Length: 124
Image 1 (tube, rainbow, N blue to C red):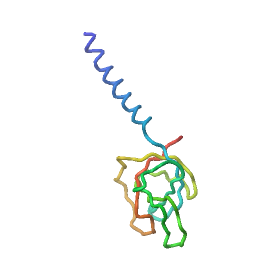
Image 2: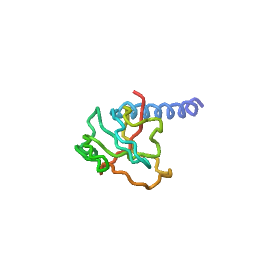
Image 3: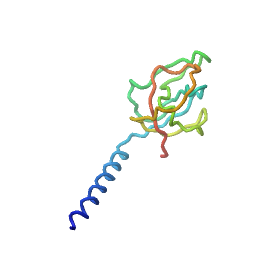
Image 4: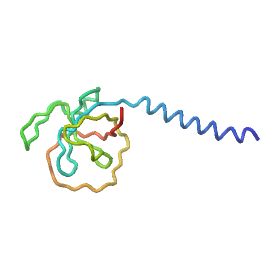
């Protein structure tokens, strides 16, 4: 009888311990919203952290303004990015391996870097 009672508890503790390990292992980066353009065409600058160089554009020119940006990427997780973050705001984020993709986004164009990254904004 005691085994039937203890087995579910062990299972619950094992799942929660696994979730804690995953959160501890997530790398946290610091970024800044460089461009908050129409229809979630957002450009983010990497300020702190070593994000894979295949995901970040070292130098990119905004063809609308002519301004050169370094270490930037396009926002790849438009459905979950907080609307409270304004252009110029700095924030912390992790890579989101499974971003929400079921939201409506208009198709108006504004230039953005050719590489995009799905991120999740976090508190540090």
